[in-house]
Image (cartoon, rainbow, N blue to C red):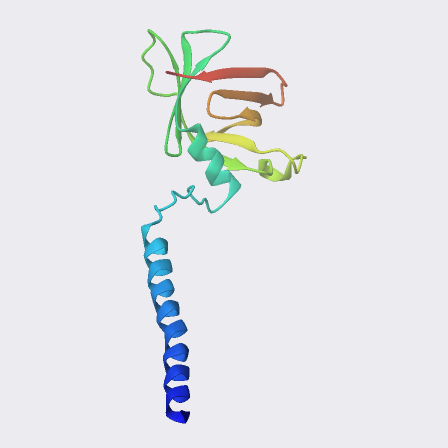
Length: 148
């Protein structure tokens, strides 16, 4: 009788470990079958993110013939029907104006340079479809829409 009890205890004690192993295999299969999640691109800085968002062609909302074309860190100011190669500027995006000028810490600036010439703009709106710049120091707004 004692042997019979030991045998039953042995059988009962082995059964849960088998179920645990079966459950572990099932859980592992479920984990491996979940689809991969696409991750958002990671930018080193907010300036890099804004430069990436600027890429492409932007048409002026005030003058449909005027446009900006941005490729990498170069900005070309163009006007339909006028062929000029001297309107290309190097872009810098910063949260501080150059030469220690007074700046708003909550504002990002678009700084364009070409030789000794520097143009500065405060970025008022920048999203997938709209770009609104404040030309400094004059203070007039320039509005653009992304070209389709």
